[in-house]
Length: 136
Ligand SMILES: [Zn+2]
Image 1 (tube, rainbow, N blue to C red):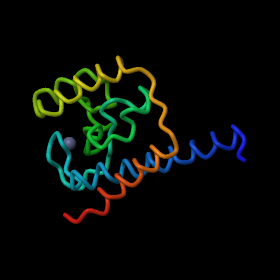
Image 2 (tube, protein in one colour):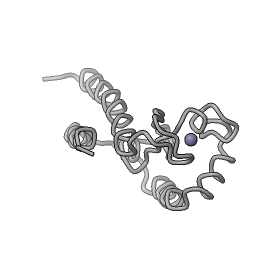
Image 3 (cartoon, rainbow, N blue to C red):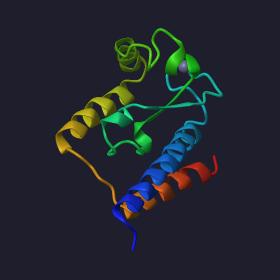
């Protein structure tokens, strides 16, 4: 029988593994193409709805943007470069993604806390692995 602390440790380890898998799956799904500028070999998976906003979208592949360095952290209009310009940029360049974001950002706030079980996490892991291993 595992203690509460041991169970928490197991979950935290799984979260880290899922974060890595999620990043790989986001890049694989986008074939490493920046969703803003189309630059190839873009290796920056970005959480559209930030992972600090809870677990509901933390490992959701739809919540992942494949970005080049400039659009992730390096440029003035980068996702982590101030925010507002990036939001404008994505609305202009990718209205489809912008629409998804606005809808799910609101949902995430209204639905409240989401605490996945170990079984949920294993299901998420298998889905992400499937995306990574899918042949192009
Ligand atoms: Zn880019």
